[in-house]
Image (cartoon, rainbow over all chains, first blue to last red):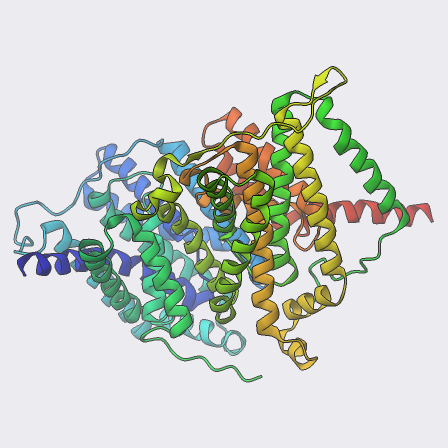
Length: 290
Length: 333
C-alpha cells in the first residue's frame, strides 16, 4: 500500500510537468487554434539558455527571470517574423512551419550547447520546509511554481485589459478588430506567453531528467495527451489532464506494462481521447453549422 | 480552394512521353556507370520515392496530414524481414504480404483519423511514429523482431550474371533493377488511380468534404481506404528498403524517418506524382551532404529548407518545374 501511494504521488509530480507543457499548448491553441509541435524543442532551448546563464555565474533566480523574459521576447519574434506571413495559410503549411521550427531548434540546441547530458540545478534546497513525506523539495517546489503560474495567468486573462483583448481576439477576430484590438499582435503575445511557460516547464523538469537536446521529446507527447484529455481549450483542464496522465503513466509503468512502452501509452491516450471524446474531459463541445 | 496542385489537367502531353522514355533509359544505364555503393544509394532513392508517393496519396491528394508514415515503413520492413528470416520466404514474395499487412493497419488507423482533422491528425500520427521503435523493442515481441539488435538478412544473389561496361552484375545492381520494376508498377498504378474517378473523388474530399458528400461520394469509406492504400505503398517501400539494406533495427525507424518522408513530400511537391522522385533524391543525398559539413546539421538543413520551400516555392520542385516549362511554352508562342 505504501508503495502504491508513493507511485501515485510521484505520478502527481510528473503530472505537474506534463500539465505545464499542456498549459503552454493550450495557450497557443486559445490564441491561434494551432497546436505547436515545436513547443518542446523551444522549451529545451530556453532551458539551455538558463543553463548557460547559470554557468556564467548568475544567481539562479536572476537567470530564471532573464530566461523567462528572453523566451517571451523570442516567442513574440517568432510569431512576428515566421508565422505572420502564413497566418491565414492552409493547415498543411502551418504544420510544415512547426516541423521546421522543431528541427531547427533541436539542431541549434545540439550545435550551440553540444549533445552531452548536463546536470541542471534545482532552486529548492534538498532539506527545507518544502520536503514532505511523499514529495522531494524539488517536486513540491515545482508544483508551487506551476500553481503560481496558473493563478497569474487566470488573473491576467480575467482582470487585465490586455487579457480581455486576447480573449476577444481569439474568440471573434473580426469583431475584435472592429473595436480596435490589434488581433495579430494579440497572437504574438500569446506565442510569447507560451514560449515563456514552456521555458518555465523546461527549467522545472531539467533537474529531474537532466538536460540534453532531446529532453522534451517524450514529455511533449505527454503534454499533448494531457492537453487533449483535459480539453484543448481549457487551461484548468490541461493541468488536471496533466495530473491524470502523470498518475496513469506511473501506475501503468509500475504494475501493468513496464517502462519500455511509455510512448505507446501516450499514443493510446491520444488516439483514444480523440476517438471516444474529441472534446476531452473538460473541453467545450464544438458544434459546427453546415 | 484548388490552390494546391494536383487538380490540373492530368492528360500527358507528347513531351511527357519523351521525357519519360529518356528517364527510363537513364535509369537502365545508370547503374553500370557508377560504383556499387552509388547503385545501392539510387536503389534507396527509388524506395523513398515509393514511400513518399504513399504519403502523397494521403496528404497531397486527400488532405489528411500524416507525420507517422515512418511507422508504416517500419512495419513493412519488419514484415519482410520476419518473413524472410523466420519463415524462409523468398524476398520477392514478401512484398505482397508487407503491402497487405500495412493496408489493413492503415485502413484501421483510417477510422480514428476520420474524427481528426488537420493538426489533430498530425499529432496522432506523430505519436504513432514515436511509439513504433518502442513497440519493436518490446520484450514480448523479441522472439519475432530480434529486439534492439534487429534482424540481419542475407542479400539475395542475382539470378544470372554478366558484365556490362566493365561492371559486374552484382547483388546491389540486381536489387536496383528489382526495385526499379516495382517502382514503375507502383507509379503507373498510382497514376491510373489518381487521374480518374477515384482521384477526382479524393481531391474533392480534400477541397470540400461537404460538397463531395453531396455529390454522392462516401467520404468516410474513401478516406479510410485512402489511408489503407497510402500505408500499402509506404509498407511496400519499407519491405524493399529492408531487402536492399539487408538489415532492420528499431532505431532505423525513429521520428527522423517520419519527418524525412514528410520533408521529401513537401520538397518534391505536395500533390505531384513525379515530384516524389525528387523528394526521394532529396532525403537520401541532402542529409549526407549536410552531415559531412557538420554533425547534427542535417536537422537544421531540413528545417531551414522546409521554411524556405513554404515561403519561396510552396508547390515544391514539381511546381518549380511547371513554372519554368510554363514560361518556356509561353515564350515559344
